[in-house]
Structure formats: structure tokens, C-alpha cells
Image (cartoon, rainbow, N blue to C red; front, top):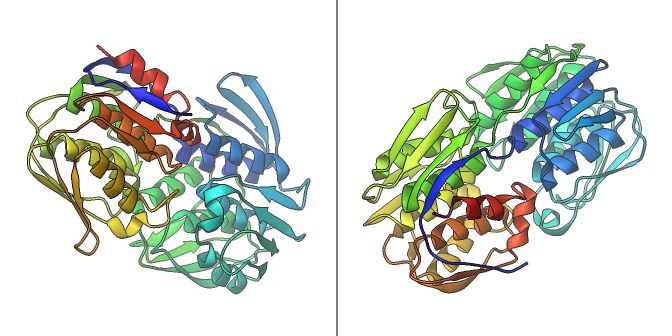
Length: 414
């Protein structure tokens, strides 16, 4: 799918999709409960569909009671020896430890860009916890056979927090208590989301400054009613659109959320945008924008939104944490440098772990999404301030997290 976007201003209010990060965690916890769970405010991007497919494969009975509500009766009883995770990195790293609770072999298979994303961080800790693992040189496909027994293990958290999330959700059902030592944990707010989700299902996870986790074994997930909050990653794109090209109110989001991407509001304030924080909505409005400095190490999914913000600001913006971008749907740092270069925006990656973006006139151009949903949305937001139309190749990849993005953006055009 190719889409051409004219420049223009935006004004209005939108409700973004539910948080796919919370949705996938809640789906996993629902599977692990032997009781009845009702999930509200569910929306179906590709990643959420992958997680839903995983819990059904692993034994959950799912009833769609209406368009946005699921009734789930959990219980680990694999219906297949193959777990298809699609192109979802979180589903892979979340459901592999959960599949390892089972005493039968389960093969985890992915597709497209996921086959190039590293999974070797899972192998050692799973083996330390009693799981037989057959890996493919650190990449998918991978086969695990449990049961995951608990004990003591060490895990590297420097590439992604997603596998740590999978372990934290699976280990409460292990027979033994577990002490998990984590080296160089990143994306810490995502671990807070995991601990919060587990607590809402009645499960306890303790930690010492995210370096050592203690998970009592033999726990039970209780069924619950769980309303999935709005997605701050999607909200960030919409708020940057408002800050750079008009005024946008995003509903069903709160600064009290544990989602990492609430940090976009700090960046918006630093660059000079107007930000209005209300109990159930956030508004961003355009003001003269200046270059800003921001550390996105623990919220790397914000980089594409920050790039669009920096491109519209006067002067140089300095973004830290680019080392987190190599193993996303593409190498996002290089993709930002290449595609924003086509738009006439200079992006310098010569300094380690740092991106410098010189804002200025954004020109009309044809650009590529690199098959990355966040890149496609970032370039669409940048197009609002361009001197002419911007054409985005493979724009349909937004379906991974926000299928209605382009339709929503169109409704905001003033």
C-alpha cells in the first residue's frame, strides 16, 4: 500500500487504540488463570491478534462477547506443538517462557522481519530453569520443552525487556521459587507494566532495583475484569501532530499510566509546545518549537515520533539511546537518517548512542517505511509540515499496531 499525504494543519480529538503492550500482557495472564477473565477495550492490531492466537493455541477458550470485549477461560493445555507468533517480537519473547511451562515440546515460529531479530537472550536462562531448548543459532524457529521449574537464573536485559516480561509472568506457576538476576535492564517502564498486570491478576513479583527479581512459585492467577487503557505509543504520534501542525486532544490516556511513552509529554514541553494534562485526556498545541535534548533509552519506541518533532523544530535536537534501535522491525536509527534525509532533514549518527537532528524546511519527497509501522506513522506526521506532498511506500505496515491510523489522521485535517 502506497499513500500520498498533502501538507496541512490538524485540529480535533481522537481516542487511540488500546495499548497493545498491556493487551498482550493481559492476554497472557488470562491464559495462565484457571478462572474466568473479561478483557474490555480490546482492539485488534496485528500484534494483538498474534497474542490472541498464541493463547488459543496454548489452551485458552476465547469468546468475543462484543466488538471490544473478550471472555477468556484460561488453562495451559496446548492444542498444537507449533506456536505461530507472526511478526510480533513481544509475543515471541512473552509466550516462549509460558510455553516452557508445558511438559511437551512446543516449536515457536515467526515470519518476515521477526526472523532477523535476535532471540539468543532466551536460551541460557531457560536452560538454567530446567527447560530443554533447541535454538536456530539464536533466531527463530525455536523449540522448548519444560516444565519450567524455577530456581536461580541470570538474564541479559540489555537488548530488550520483553523476555524478562515473559519470565516474570511464567515463573509464578513454576514449582519452585525463583531468583532472577538481570544484567543491564532497559525499558524499565515496561517491566513496571508487567508487574502491574500480574498484580491485577493476584500474582506477586518482587524486585531490587530491577537487578534482582524474586518470584514465589506455586502461585495462582485469579480471573478478573481488566480494562485495557489507551496506547501511549499511538498517542505520542497524534500529540506530535498537534504540536507541529495545529492542536490535537487524545482521549482515554493518563499521565498516571505506567506506559513508557508518557515521556513524550516531557519532550513536547522541552521543545516549547503547549501541553494540557486533564484527567482522561492530553492536548498538544503548536507553538514556536526549538531544538531539545532527550534520553529515550527506556522508551525507544518514541524515537520515530521524536524525529518528527525534531524535524519541525528550529535548531538541533539531540536524542540519546540509539543503541536500542538496531533490532526493531528495521534498524530504526539508520531508517530515520535515510528517510528524513530524503525529506531534507539532516540526521547525524556519528556520535555513539546519539542522534542529532537539525530541524528546518521539510520538502516533498517519496519515502519508504522499511516495513516498520512506527516509521510509516512518523513520516506521515512529518508530512504535515512539508512543502508539498509526501508519498510513503508500504504504508500498510501500520496495521501492526494502529490499523486505523491514516483514517484517524485524515479526520484531524483542518
